[in-house]
Length: 247
View 1 (cartoon, rainbow, N blue to C red):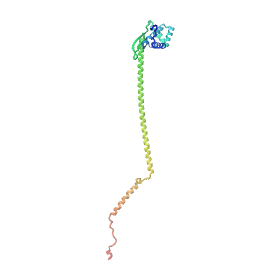
View 2 (cartoon, rainbow, N blue to C red):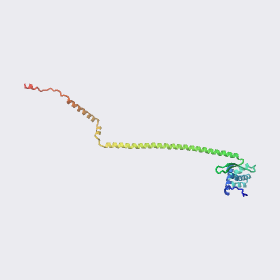
View 3 (cartoon, helix red, strand yellow):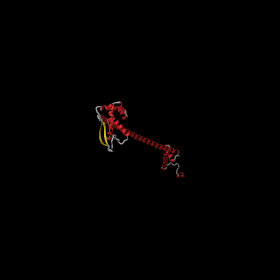
View 4 (tube, helix red, strand yellow):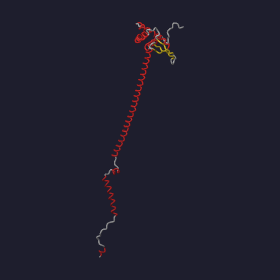
């Protein structure tokens, strides 16, 4: 039988359960509502309402008892200065539990534990959080776009640098190829100078005057045979005929 067992253990040890209730109460006072399982919401409800009762008393002893649970001076101040005065005319029922249905995965029943009368503040906080998320997304998109642009520029620079390097390497290779060719031609010219000149080369190197003489000599030789072929001219003989001598 379950007589006098008022505490729900929640599958935790006493210290772990105490820390869980402290965290849930701090979250409710800070955000005015939390989303958790139905069992933990029902267990934390009594702790939160007791803290609000301490806030309505507004004594040093009550502040120390509240600080014992919350362990945060800022939360104690908000409890006594902001939350408790709104419930001055209310004798109980400071919180509300809204069921949300089963959780995906394990099917645990979920619920929202919230403070009564703080719905406008909750809506404003939701709007602020949504605006922050949208701003973060926009900043992230801008950052990604800037990174993409930088990456494209870097890629373009990298592609242009190898092209310049290839052009330079091509120019160097062409120069390197041209140097051996010029060296070969110079060596061949030196060899030709060192080798003895052949007859054909000597003939080619003859002066224009010698070539003119050679061409004139064969012309004169050709003219001589023509003179020999022509019949000899008749000469007047000084000798008298033989008959005249006899007489």
